[in-house]
Amino acid sequence: MSYKIALSFADGKTFFCETNGVESVLDAALKNGIKIPLDCREGVCGTCQGRCDSGNYTQDYVDDDALSADDLAQGKVLTCQTKVSSDAAFYFDFDSTLCSAPPTRQIEGVVVKVDRVSDTTAVLHLDVSSVAALVDYLPGQYARLQVPGTANWRSYSFASAPGSTTLQFLIRILPSGVMSDYIRERCAVGDCVMVEAPLGAFYLRKVKNPLIMVAGGTGLSAFLGMLDQISQAPIGQDVTLFYGVRSAVDLCELDRLNSFTDTIPGFEYHLVVSEPDAEWQGKSGYINQHLCVDTISRTEHDIYLCGPPPMVESVKEWRTTHGLEHSTLYFEKFTESNT
Image 1 (spheres, rainbow, N blue to C red):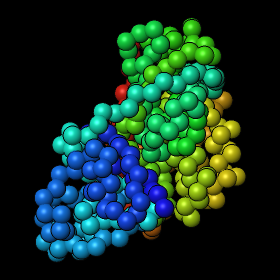
Image 2: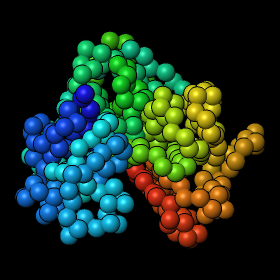
Image 3: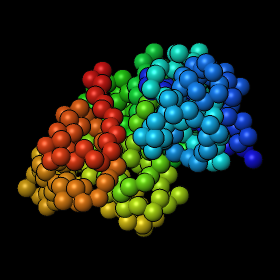
């Protein structure tokens, strides 16, 4: 039996390797050139410590001085003693440079379609079938795309679940900018686009609690990838998405969100427009004004935020103000390029 292991690091790099389930996670990593710091290899020193974010695993031996009972309850592991019995993801609170890890892969995708899904947003579809074996990422992570005909790279979250031979990226069309100009003026089917991936420490962890997802603008992209994954493998928990934009014309992928209400049990979404016109009949203002304190205070939730820094900070402040730190928070801030 073979399982896939994702190893993510504090600098946002993620590397994948295969294991037979008999060898330790440490040995599987070393076999693939990922030199996780180690010392005793006996479960005593704690040097090879990481955290399991998803997947099933066992540990052969862990000394009390290496990991406490609280550490174990939080999913912390000693990779020299850890064996997996499913695909799994592990996080390490140090940079990948300490592991002499191989460089992030660059692959070539081919444009197969560009959909203008709103006045200000497009979805870029890239065929990677010829290099599918080299494409690995976790739902919620991002890639860097090189703008064809230039030396410029821009970062975009994957808007599709891992495993597809066609990658999707949600791209905001700015009045001016190298990627916006390319999408608007000269993007054509058959164009080759270089993709560097995977990147980012924002990804869907093992789901143990109801989920609240908060997306600002094209931060929706990361959640589309997560929801794609959840629709393929139900998680048994309710999922609520809050999707905020400045103007109603910025809303996009609503048909896709509607489809998730059919394929994901317990899924619902709410649209919030911060600067609505007279015709808008839905929620307005800021997303934190529409989050329910009572719901989150009664039951521990996992909260995921992705969007502009002011949105992320406002929700973080709301959570602290209402004493909801018992819910786990994951977030990714992004700033759109103006060039």
